[in-house]
Image 1 (cartoon, helix red, strand yellow):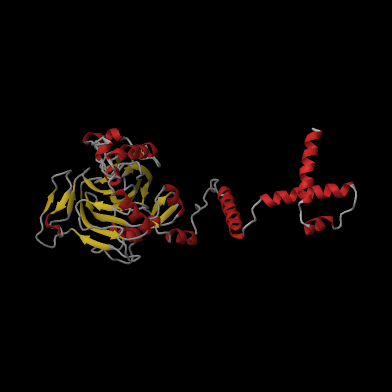
Image 2 (tube, helix red, strand yellow):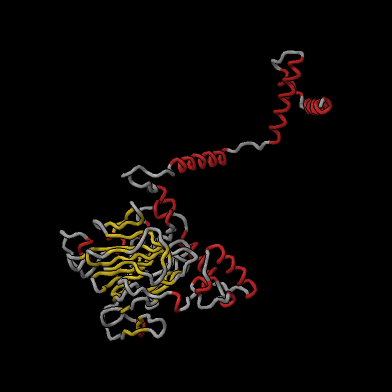
Amino acid sequence: MAAVLRRACSGVSSRVSSLSYSQQRALNTGVPSGPRRSVFQMVCSVLEICRSFLPRPRTLPLLLVTGGGYLGYQHYKGRGQPEEGAPPRTATPTQVALYHSFPTRLLSRAWGRLNGVELPTWLRKPVYSLYIWTFGVNMQEAAVEDLHHYRNLGEFFRRQLKPAVRPLCASSCLISPADGRILHFGRVQNSQVEQVKGVTYSLEHFLGPQRGRSQDASRSFQDQLLSSPQNDLFHVVVYLAPGDYHCFHSPTDWRVELRRHFPGSLMSVNPGVARLVKELFCLNERVALSGQWQHGFFSLTAVGATNVGSIRVYFDQDLQTNVPRYSKGSFHDRSYVALDDQVLKAADEGGVASVEGGGVASGEGVVLQRGAAVGEFNLGSTIVLLFEAPKDFSFDLQPGQRIRVGEGLGSL
């Protein structure tokens, strides 16, 4: 032990002897002579050695680390459940503006191009297998289970299912339009729709002005949608995760009269983000199909998200989403109600309604049958149903539950 200490002291002494004259003078200033001076010199030399190995602190990284630590601490403090009756914590307008400024539309277009790149045959199985393992995809339900069949990621995302794996619930008047998770459901109150529990958005902002309906200023926007005072307006939100089946279907027999495309942002619609960003569904790009079912007003809205810039509606080939240029707050309508001699017919595949000639549909709109394929996402996103129904309509759902196409949503 003594030998080890001697070797350490000799190393320190050699380090001290290698110091410059100015450094030694600084060390000697104000230090008494004798044994205490040698101890002081040894401590200073050790500190000098440590300082030589440590990087010089930089102002910007130091501020970033400190600020990040502070924000993390504040987030940790706020993780607890809010007090009963207290409003949920949402992002500030500044935070939303910063998120909104991210080039999510450009990134989504780049992701769409990447999805269309054809993969070599030998690479397809490893890439798709990694995706299957990451997101829990059930390939036994796919119409084609052979991974080599899918030429690119886009084809794999939009894979079709075997006909028998999604039976339609016979006891429910309304079925799920997509595979996913129930984010929220219930009655619409005071023209405000709940995005998640305690976080709402404006019904009028979400659907836009309704032409051809009563414009009585004394009636709320919600009441103007209703065809009978004996009915209420209901909603249900289905969130599609990346591993889910990405097509969406008709939840009931109904007639589509109008397609309204809202260009907008492509922020994430993950439930965690939906809890923070108020009116998230109104800010994002979306395609709203509205019309009538047996009880009155009915609408199905496909909401886009990050990497989901492509929303396709099978019977409307003119629809183009996530185009490079768009005007904030604008929307583009296409009416399917009769304006010319176009003939409406059912498509040969999947019972999807289509329009001959690519023009505006004649008749009373595009008639969709219960369970018919309507469209698809490029990855996964959200479907919002808003519909009129008698006041005694009841949901057969639980918040957060998993659901699949064809399973019942509610009954009368």
